[in-house]
Image (tube, rainbow, N blue to C red; front, side, top):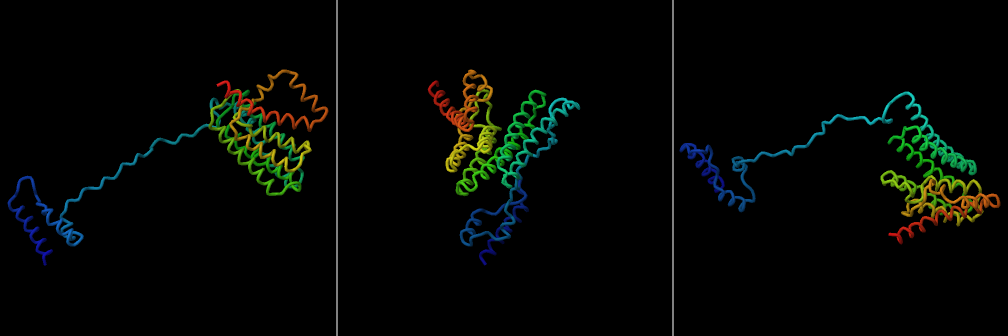
Length: 301
């Protein structure tokens, strides 16, 4: 009853306000004291009272719409002449050859042809170096070619190389140990390639052992049959994997070629005497050179 009388009183006030014609107002809103009293007593306002309350419009946030037209990025920047397209196709054919040889190495390793699979990996390394050199010499280097090279490297050096190593370790070490070491190679190769794509380039040193060189070391180790025990081989594979993602500086091939001739003569003579021992010493020396260069740079700074 009291709620009905309150609403009747408010309606009466509205009608009186309209009859008096108060300037600047067409509607007299109900006194907020009654509304507050109803909210405290009943927990809510009546639907009729709520209908006469002013309602502010809802402001919908404006969402910016990108209406810029989509632009296609050309695979080959610059002139698109027939000669440049042929050069571009030749360079990418080398990249795809490295990819196909990596797949072939996996198939051969699955069939037990480990030595032949290792030779295929060595051919992958050769094609990987060839496509970059040809792209720079022929003037057809492009972002597309860089991404293609990175994907081919992941297949050939990040997947095929650990598969070949795992096949070569079968029967000499526990399968779990071989699987962990080879999985480390694949994971570190992916991290190394991704980091190389987004990091600034240094013309003098690599940041960590490059995946191409790591795969070459693994392939040559299997191909020539370095006489080490299975557990030593597993430890060496894991060490090489961590060296790929390390921050140690490793000299590039262009700097190695500038070494004194007698330093190159020693490995050649050693290979004629014992190629396996010489190869192992060269690999160990190169891996140790990274921490030594890092210490030298820290002291110089």
